[in-house]
Image (cartoon, rainbow, N blue to C red):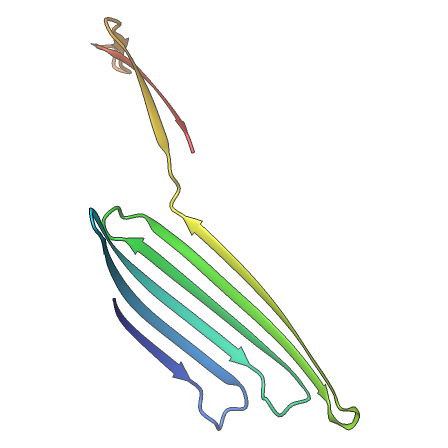
Length: 140
């Protein structure tokens, strides 16, 4: 496994905290008869209100794209998170709420089934005949 990541964060002079990041990771596994290699690229961002405020929020998002280097298949993974917080110091009360949303998508896969009828000639759009006749149907 090889991995490299980079993050850029706003400094302490800015009241809001902003963070941006990117990374790439390459995995290689050997399971006896089969070996797999994959590469994952990740992008992330986060924005958070000042910690000292009585009310606050934080929003973060991450997208990871993983590609199998042998087959070319790609998987996208998304993660979004929202956190809300409140504090009332005189009464000693505090609360928080966090909501996460995830999603995953793969390449669209199309299967093609072709029927070949021997001995029957088909006509092309130009009017010439070609043999054998084929019929194709698709589904996903």
